[in-house]
Image (tube, rainbow, N blue to C red; front, side, top):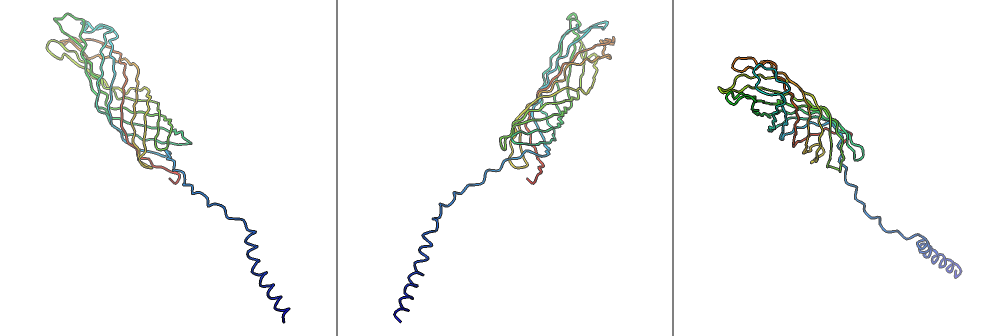
Length: 264
């Protein structure tokens, strides 16, 4: 009986010591991993957008008499009339962007209604007693552009440049002014084509809505028009050709709504 008691005592002591020995062999737990917040979401400019714009337009026209063929000329060749009218302009735009890394490329079309209109009188070389002069009036009705765009995106801020083709609905009037008032006038309209370059900054408030400020320069070169229906006190002037050099500066504020894709 004494031997059995000794065996049971040894077994009990061994059973109690085994968990402690096993625990001593286990590695100590390391420090808890530090919490890493997710990176901020990167704004994606990819998508199709529609928008509107408003601003100021400054027309720069130079009207030069090229020849004097009238029997009673009221203007000498080379006489120049400069016009610089400005007015509020506004319209709409539509385009598409595609972003890869920080580079954004795209295309855009715009249409802008114009209230620009300006007139300038150029005195003639005739004797003062006749007081015959020429008045030039330029009043473009609208502008349109089709451009490519490239920009650099700093998350929700886009700095961009653009360039492409431009059109202008030109409206030109030549008026003969005499001592008794307007002698005659003739109006010509034309759709002139040129190019445009510009750039600006766009800021996105939300995933879909953005606003921008933009400057555009539109150049339409020089084109000659012949006014053939002018007269001085009933005497036909004959052909009166003028070369009109035309350009426009636009200062715009706009807003775009973007239809994004790719699950964003």
